[in-house]
Image 1 (spheres, rainbow, N blue to C red):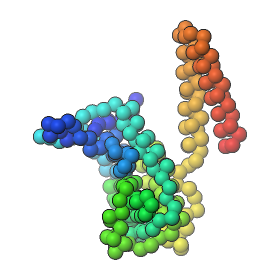
Image 2 (cartoon, one colour):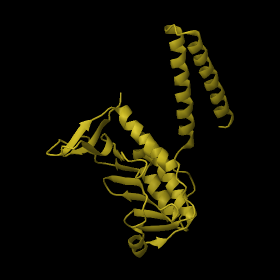
Image 3 (tube, rainbow, N blue to C red):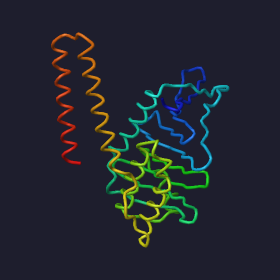
Length: 256
């Protein structure tokens, strides 16, 4: 059973609720995602190192409301934000980095003219833990201020950092273990004298997770065929799904 709690934060001034964000919280990490994943997707996370993160749902007051939601509802919005970042086309822009190796704090920004887009990455390490985030908006109004305080970085560096952070955010349970590795990898990406020699994420975990999910679905279908008396057309459809899953698993194994 999950040890996480899930809630949404919204305001209500009598004209209907305006949702601000969705949250997953536990003592190991907190994740916040956007309700507006089409126009302004974001994923913010705080990861504990020595001191547990706050896992209490805030109390509502005045027009600021907090409502507990199901894990499935949070996961739906997390997946939509995650998919929005996966679908971004991030080539042909201006790329900047601002940060300090001494403070273990880095921010990366990319700006694009057509269509107008600003993508931001934040990676910060402290004694208590780490803050890691992805943010995107369809405006480049912050470009002048970013250019003043930052330096140019190559497209390849930005894209590799983006990929590492996206992979880091994929599995919350792995973030406490991988947080320091991520920060060191980011430092290595912008320091030629400290090259990164290994990937942040263990690719084996993706293979096993995908395989297990497919086999779990196959067993669910098998149980339905045994327990329920569906009409023949539905049973044929379910058996076809099982065959498709077997094929997908075989392809996954052959290319692993």
